[in-house]
Amino acid sequence: MPTDSPSPVLVPEAYQPASSDSQKNLKVQNKEKQLDDISDHLPYELGYMPEDIRQMAERELGETEERKQAALRKFKQLIAAEKHLYVRTDDLCLLAYLRGKKYDVDRAFKSMKNTYKLRMKKRFYDADDNSIVHEVFRQNWIGFLPYRAKNGSVILVIKVGMWDPEKVDRDLLMWVITHCMIHSIEDEATQVAGYSAIIDVRGVSNKHLKLLTIENILLIIHSTQNCFPGRYKAVHVIGMPKFFAYAWNMCYPFILSYKMQKRIFIHGENLKNLHKYMSPSILPQELNGELGPFDNSWWHSSILKRNDWALEQRLYGYKK
Image (cartoon, rainbow, N blue to C red):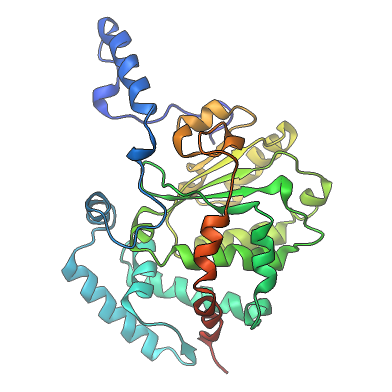
């Protein structure tokens, strides 16, 4: 489990010291590589598949046009045979699940079914008015950064210390995060390159910790690992108190998959460790970045334009 002193970042072989005589020169190359600028990063909103991400789909997912079409046909057949299930069957939606499960159609279909079975249990998804969700976004403690990480993943920021759990309870929080995810996964590049998250827990209090029940933790894990088809590249936790870090280190092996365990990084207050993974050029001021204070208004404006579409998503699922 990475801690405040995480395992060394994997770098290309060309940047690894080959001998003592060349170490100094290679350190300079590493420093120059890390000090990239904003032009080295793709924007959050793409709407197309850049060539390097298309190659990522081939390399990591085994995606080819032939395999894609065959998987889509089988997926649609499984949906048609499932009683009482009414869902989107457009290619963009189905590809999100297929890419999330590396084109294992049966696992992708199970993930879709889990998604809608969870929605049956959480009735807040049925609301025909989501204005309360947008009020939460206007509080400016959750949203995406305008640029992607170097690996192409979009970056979700959650400033937990600004969240008031007495006003935004667990179910509303889940609804808020659902809005974040259903909008972002509509981009094919995000379906392939996935998600990174920065969870800033500086300023947390007892009222936050009270919500860390086993039930709530398991709900989060189930919804992310077994339901939503996102590809999770990294979760960076900033400012975690030491006593909680110790407790977390004892618990996480029992509740997270091995793959996710390797992708969670606890940085404490040391933001320099975060910068080993994400360039300051794309980070907000609160994370010692160069973008100015965190501001989700540009992103919130973009999803407001599609709010009718977001509300339509509640119509899908299992019908009695």
